[in-house]
Amino acid sequence: MERSKRDFSHMVDKLNGSFAELDLSQRLQLIGELAEHAVFTSSLGMEDQVLTWAVAMSGQPIEVATLQTGRLFPETLSLIQITRDRYGIEIKEYAPKPETLEDFVEAHGLDGFYNSVEARKACCNTRKLEPLAAALSQADVWITGLRREQSEDRRTIEFVEWDAERGVLKVNPLADWSAKQVKEAVAAHEIPVNPLHARGYSSIGCEPCTRAIKPGEDDRAGRWWWEQQNSRECGLHVADDVSTRRPQREVKAPSHA
Image (cartoon, rainbow, N blue to C red; front, side, top):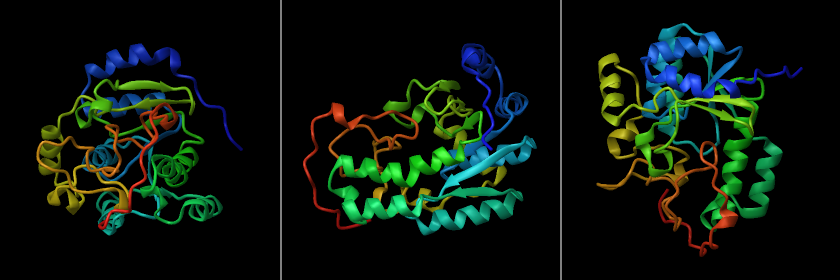
């Protein structure tokens, strides 16, 4: 039975002020004190691996979850088990509903997301947004690895936000961290990371939709690179209503994944 969630919307300003004065372990402790059910959704990226390490070290009752889209890199799939073994924690996997996935493939084709922004959004909705809803169905706090430095879309994220659509307090404990700080934490604590990072993949999502970035590009430039738009978001974190933009021209599927 679904339980009622706590409403933290009135505490956002106060919590943002508090988080600014705390280090990462203290931020996680505060989350543990507030939440009845906190869920950290990890994409297994470098930031998320740092947070997974911090959650494991904190001893706080925070569920670690990942969205098992069905199109992840083999390196990402291997890292899930490596991380479980390293820290002795469960990483709960949330997958798309088979019937919804079948409907998408029937309507667009397995790789139909290359053909239009609308089709790509439909794929993200099927493989990511619906599993996310399942992951957060009982949560009152949602923890992410978002950082302001990752892209232009994320420059203004707060430590704490009220997600009215999902009815959760969204917490970004690494919002003010730099890429340098993330890499230093990985090195200092020997945190396992995706080997694709060493090959130029800064932000790693589904295999067909991710490429290595080029010098000077921001961290998110390798996501959905074939689209003629600046935003590199799937809808998990930044609302992106494609109906407000000019229609995108159709493109042929890229010759490489």
